[in-house]
Image (cartoon, rainbow, N blue to C red; front, side):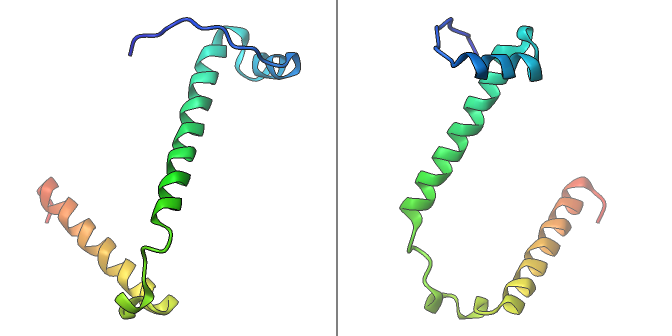
Length: 91
């Protein structure tokens, strides 16, 4: 990915903390990581907001209780593990 130089205004105390934690030579790396993480959270929040109400309990009576959900997850995880082992040639 090509980097582009930009100017960003930061409060002095925030910059001092960034330098203390990451080091002055690692500012950009820390800010890039923080921006990626924040953008991922924002995208997730938007997707969750758009999907709100899509799940209907009446459409999934097999997942009504915690026990039902645990049983379903156990089944899904076991089938995923089996598929991975098959692909790896171990089962």
